[in-house]
Length: 93
Image 1 (cartoon, helix red, strand yellow):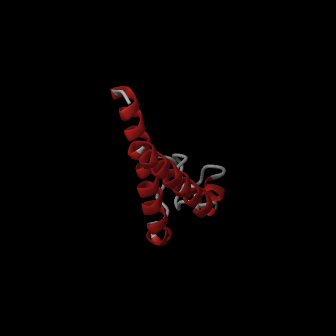
Image 2 (cartoon, rainbow, N blue to C red):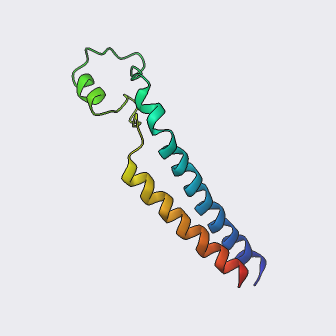
Image 3 (cartoon, one colour):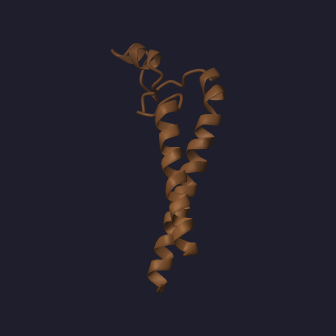
């Protein structure tokens, strides 16, 4: 195994671990994020057409979600776990 193969395998492990940790933390923070009041969308007024629909849907004006979706976060965490385990298996061969 040459240097570039080794680095690529280590990057796969690191990316998988980052997906697991990041999405795991997003799932853990859901309760606290749900209790936090919705932040206004910067300088925009709440009287702007569609603002109440965005707030009701749990979205901020910047396009970020107020609360992390469970399904997507769990799917990405599982994908990261598979990537991490495949990378570790490739490193130990």
